[in-house]
Length: 611
Image (cartoon, one colour):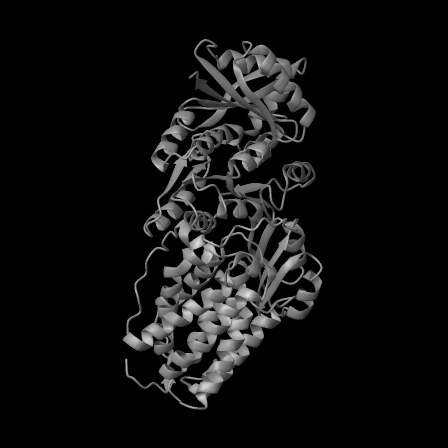
């Protein structure tokens, strides 16, 4: 590239952005490692990379020679793809650039500086409580430094070279501007991410090379020296995001939206325009945010990341090399999830036009209440591959490998979505295994528990996969439907079969089969001692030799906790003394519950050889 560059067109701007994005990709893992503000969840680098991945995809679709149009396109892509606090701020910064220069075919130094000013201003306005010592500081410092350098030279090369000196000083100063950063002895992760983008741009101006797209490198413990993981009592659990698109003929009032959400949680960022807005906020009740957002336009892209689990992953024991993931089709007691660090990607639940994140924005109890009162029978859908990819990317930056245990492929596309995401992440040098559990609900949960226990012992990914596959071969699930009416409503059972079952007083039992099918496996006539007869049915079909093996049992219930507890007691009593390793109770989600409704009881059993 020429030594002197006084204007930028759309193609040149696009290459500058590409170079900056590639540099960010190189540094993603390190940025994750130093992430302690606003929460130490270790995902700032991943969120910034995912946000700018959307920008990169938009740049690569087709060339755009008009500088302003290119910036508008980039901003729109960033808004759609924004992830996390830092991603939402980046999107708002790009939106300001686009609004400031959208009409310009080419950008001079002066016009570029004005656009930077607007971008920095937009970014600050997006936050309900802007703080110094963050990415906002380096955005403003870059605009100030660029303006000062523009007065001395009209050349973009010198602008980046001289401005970065001041920006790096501002970055280093963040180490002492916030208590969280000072305690951990690190600079702000979001600020560092933006500086790395600028460094990539300068590298391109110096050499004409865009850089190489590489998988983020794992950072060794030595980089964390003096950066002790802070133990922070989080006020809120879920990092919640959604996209709001204006309805036809209407505008989004960003100020009113921000004011309405301001008392809902922490780390609120509302970025966007009157046409489209991205919401990011930390809350305990994601559904409350989604309900408010629906009042301002069409809702999409709902997500809620569990920051408690993210913090655990970011600061996990160094002896654990593998992270274990499940989709929420698995029913796992909370104590196992927390003790073993099992990460969950939520399935979608749809009641007519309303969508929910399973077990996040809709609890199992809420699901069963809605199932009974809503005339529209719900549908479930697998998480999009992007949800899995985001989870895999984050975990791969903190572990050597990831193993995902997924709902049976015979009845859901969840495993396929996880596989697509795993393949994408694996091409970036991060080993991810997506497994078809051939099971569901508590059975899938037992497979995940076995995998997570193996991972907690420090074994490698192939060993975890072997443990999971062995568990799959030795796990069965039985479900006594609360009512066949819900299976008829959902189309799983023909109406005539439902009518006959009701006439005969037949209580249908579903079971899993070795090939992953879930279908009728028996039935019990009449209501008398139904729970006890179901326990006997299960024990007779899943036998245990107490001399050679033990059995692990999970019991799930469809909003009938006491019935579930009594069933668990009966199962323990009916198996030979000492043969039950554990029998735990959990809520049953929609994977089976959608077909059986309230009152459904489900049992998963995993046979384990004695040592």
